[in-house]
Length: 187
Ligand SMILES: C[S@@+](CC[C@H](N)C(=O)[O-])C[C@H]1O[C@@H](n2cnc3c(N)ncnc32)[C@H](O)[C@@H]1O
Image (cartoon, rainbow, N blue to C red; front, side, top):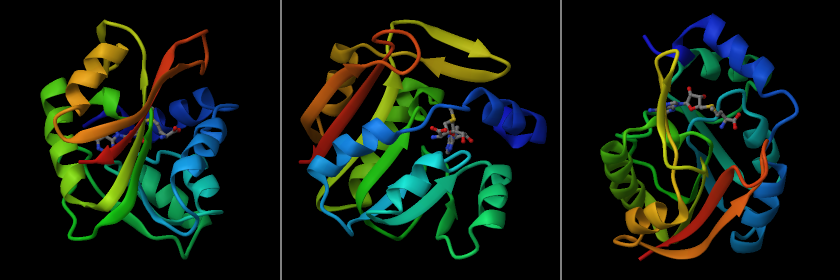
């Protein structure tokens, strides 16, 4: 059982993430993605970004933690949610955009490669990806949770086979220049 599959882990995360959300990232996304586009969020967690995305887009939230999904559904009865693992993304549906904020660093790099292939399959033509990562060159395991940090060049290498890189930039979330976001178009 993973960290986010326990009430304790979920509550710990919710407390830790207080004061953080993807407002600035979503403003950047809006420059690339027209209003009313369909957006799938992977690893929505508490759903703060999903709330914001839903003001402009037709959103579908997802996570592989049933606890996060149930928690969000309680407050948002009409929301479209899917229980999806970020690696397999087993759905027949397709989307104009796939978004994640600090999720894909929990995958082993080989699994991230599989995820990106799958993401390409479930993107509509001309669809875009928007993902954020922690910047660095280490791999850590904290309370059973994997953290794989990436530098710009290592992400570039991962993305280039299947995606045109529209933006790949360093930004600050907590400590100066601790994060990277990527905007990618399906090749
Ligand atoms: C660091 S939290 C980020 C949550 C949210 N995006 C935010 O910005 O607050 C990571 C989220 O990814 C989810 N997650 C981790 N591994 C996943 C996987 N393999 N498939 C789908 N979701 C996953 C966790 O359940 C958790 O909700």
